[in-house]
Amino acid sequence: MSLILTTPDETQHEVAYQISNLTITGKADGGSGKLSLKIENHDVPVNADGSFSTNAPLRVGKNTIKVDLSDASGKRLSKSITIERKTLPPLRFTVTGVTETLSTTDETVNINGSVYAEGLRTEVSVNDTPVQTDSEGNFKQTVNLSIGKNKIIVTAKDASGRIDNKTFIVTRKEKTPPKISLEFPNEDKKTLRSKPDGTTLKGKIAGGVGQLALTIDKRNVNVNNDGSFSAPLSLKPGKNIIDLEVVDAAGNRDKQSWIIYNNIVGK
Image (cartoon, rainbow, N blue to C red; front, side):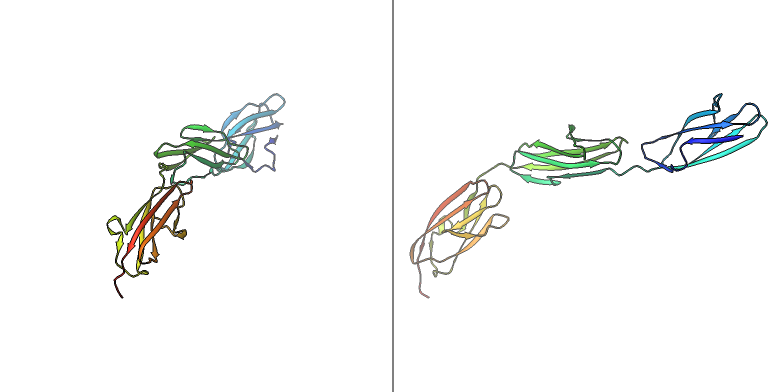
């Protein structure tokens, strides 16, 4: 009595995660009377020429499948197949072009990224709208922004049913032009009683788009993150004209001229 396994062949030791059933084929020969074949305790028909074929379920990880052949006299012959079904490949999902909390004055934001799971079909959606991916899983989608907070959910799925969500809050601000306001001197203190080198101009800039460029009498002055600035002034006795100008990244500007009277009182 003989039992020959044709598939899988002896060199096959593993299959991909997607393979959930293993096809087993072979041939049984010899013995007395009718041959009986069981694979994992399930009866498998043996054809008149001794050939057989069946599918055996595979779990993830190592599988040992028993093949038992017996004849009418009770003679038995057993073989086993050891094969590993690979574990589920990782779902690699990245999103670029946006951060979890982003503020912008732009009307749109570009959502870029990639999704990949070896051997598995993947798909992407942005706020439940399907997004096309290229052959390498890269994608790009432009999202329109409303004034205020915008919630953007980017979802990746694969053929195994896994889902990964990434959520971003993008705040769109109004494009307001910059505006200079002086804290010192103010409207009530245009006449200063000080030495010429004893005055510091202080103020703050509200609004504007992106980086602000401030000049005072054509001298560049640093603007802090909160919009505040300060600059020393060298005032001559009497009337002084101070020119201020701020320009934002969009080209919006605010120009102001102040007349400051400096009355010097001795040393």
